[in-house]
Length: 100
Image 1 (tube, rainbow, N blue to C red):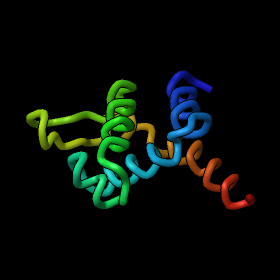
Image 2 (cartoon, rainbow, N blue to C red):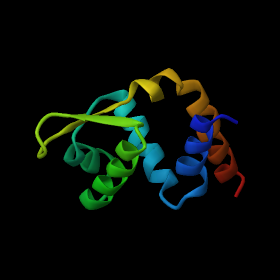
Image 3 (cartoon, helix red, strand yellow):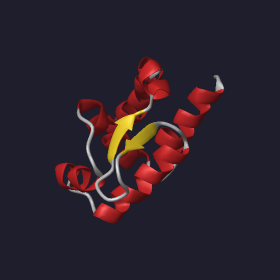
């Protein structure tokens, strides 16, 4: 397992906010959006969305463009380039959750 896979495993499998971060990443892959748009689309608290966006940005999985208020978030080139690895790791938690 390389360092990218370890990071993905940690952020999307083993931590408490894994499900929320997964939903955010999937939504951003569909369409770049700002925090308010994400909160509305995913029916999440705005501050929760902001927290997880900061985590994802700090780990270089997403990037922001624009002014502070209304910044639009995009998947980073590194995440886009490793999408299949991300899906493989995330799908493990989805399969695990469906067995419960």
